[in-house]
Amino acid sequence: MHRIAVWLAALMVVTALPLLPAAGLAPTQAAPARIESVVVADASDLETLDGTLRIVTNHRRVYGHIYDALLTRDGATNQIKPRLAERWERVDDRTWIFHLRRNVKFHNGDPFNAEAVKWTLERARDPKVSQASVYAKAFEKVEIINPYAVRVTTTHPDPLMLTRVADLIHIGSPDYHKRVGSPEAGVKPVGTGPYRFVEWVKGSHIKLVANGDYWGGRPAVRNVTIRFVPEATTRVAAVLAGEVDIATELPALLVERLEGSGRSEVTTAVDPLSIGVWLRHEGPMSDLRVRRALNHAVNKDAIVKTIWRGRATPLNGPLFPGSFGYDPGLKPYQYDPALARKLLAEAMYPNGFTIKMDVPIGGVAQGKEVAQAVAGDLAQVGVNVEINLFEWATFLKRIFTPRSEAMNSTFLLYIKSASLDGDGVLSTTFLCDGVYPAGWNWNRYCNREVDKLILQQARTMDPKVREALMQKASQMIRDDATWIFLYTPQQIFGKKKGLPWKARMDGMVFIFDDIK
Image (cartoon, rainbow, N blue to C red):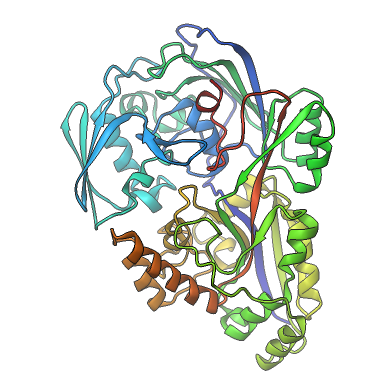
């Protein structure tokens, strides 16, 4: 019997730092507001409030209140628009100039200027410091032109430059970090954003209050509380009871409870991510026939129909429908357990083998149910799956610890590309040199021909040429059966009836931006 470790994850991943409950900085003035408070129930607690360190969804949902990025996205259209950079210009394919807003201050009074931008972007490049390094490593030089203009030179022609600085890297105060130290800044954050930090009680909640001095105008909501509620049923119950105003990451099977209550509503958006079992290419998984067998063994249509109630779409490869570079003509693996058994027998595994599946709780919508469905299908072709449940933060710590047990594992995971550009999936997870911490290629897939295509598209400014390169790379990744390609789901949120908020395409919950 062969044993392979298999992990279930959402690539909203975090390197863990030990944190304690923290009291915040008192606001200098209260901002008038037309809504006194909004309470958001999210699935997972954070590891740090240092806005440069994490780019995972649950962290960015909080960071976007406390901090600003250079650029941001429109919640309805997903189009990039100004934030701390009021305008920008492309000098050439490798050189960009960002012109910064004047008269902006951090919550503690420190000035926002080009020095803060340079310090933040250079800090984000370091893979030992920031998850954003998978994007920021493209910054070759960051130069100060004057106190309110910076020049960024990239390592190569970069069609994704604006995406890299839109809500992914949040600008911090270098002076504040120098005074208190980065660990302290990670529990008592200071940003330029529309909300000031009040308190963080680990495992319970984060409280924020409107920044009355915000450069972008007064927030419509005075107080924002983010509560951490791992169980989806509990989040739904809290909405129905009027205890919370917005609940994130809900399973499709609970939609009817919300819609039929008369007290709550459901709001949805396409979730820009791909979910699949990442197959580590060692042991049985080193054989292409085995990887293809597992793809044929899992009934993705049934998962979409029964678990997601049709609110998901089966994948035909690594990219999700609607993303730039997606190929609708790519043929998916058909559900065919007889063919799966035949391929396993040809690969000398007629009796299958045993795998372990570690499933994070609170990080993946309906992840436990999906894992059980995958395990049931694999059992039908002789592959025995042992499922272990992990608290989300514990799971992520294992994933982001170099040389940990997780580095020798195969896992089921999703990767998100909030920009709706397929490069957010391809460049981060399929490059030979992208093994963590250089990237998120935890299954250590390597195909040098695929590498060439991915690297070429990431340096090509012509969108039609880029799209063709990405589609060719996707075809090869699909043929290599790198994952068990599963599905892309809808984002499902519950909310208090009448609350003027709806789901965004990028999955964020930004109260200032979305409630006016």
